[in-house]
Image 1: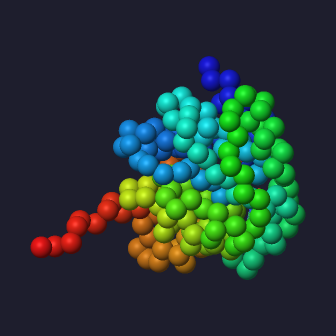
Image 2: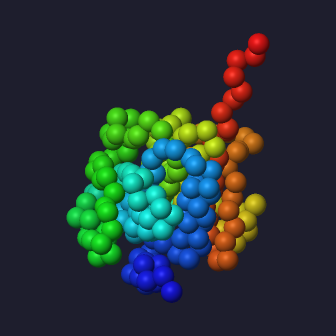
Image 3: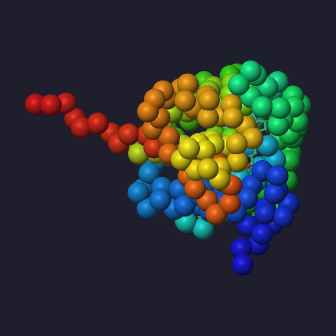
Length: 221
Ligand SMILES: C[S@@+](CC[C@H](N)C(=O)[O-])C[C@H]1O[C@@H](n2cnc3c(N)ncnc32)[C@H](O)[C@@H]1O
């Protein structure tokens, strides 16, 4: 039995679930298998639950030196916009960097590099140049769109970005659709047909996967 997994599922059930832990572990395993270089980033880390899981999985894969960078306003959610539901109100989900440190200290895990501040004030200057895997969990339309604009161009060829709360109910009718702004933002960014693939879990998982194109071939001769 994996004690960290059990602890996350009991203590952080509001933001992680078995399906999410499974799909993230799967992506990190594949990243290791491909030998994908670059940093790991999480946009919207809250109290550090998924960051701890990523650290735990990377350590298990012999990737203890791989850096994880996390970004959060630590001021609660911003105000929802026209494209968002009323599932979360302004100020909800307030946390602080010490929460993230405590989550990792609880399991004697190396903490991530923490970047406090609103996405539109931190990402442009503080995202690593090359991203091997990203987890975007901003919940609202504007937060998701800002995250995509800064993250996608930095993805290494073949790298994956998971978009939490991306509910494509046409592709996966069981997906939880409580934060519709996330898919609206993704559609606005990527256009149609969207390259984002809806993942399916055992339960009501709503996660989209974007895979950066493999490097284009060299110049033609
Ligand atoms: C659902 S929580 C993230 C949960 C986390 N991924 C986990 O697994 O535990 C969403 C987080 O996004 C952050 N957030 C949302 N919009 C943001 C923005 N525009 N800038 C910075 N942080 C933002 C909130 O502060 C909140 O902590």
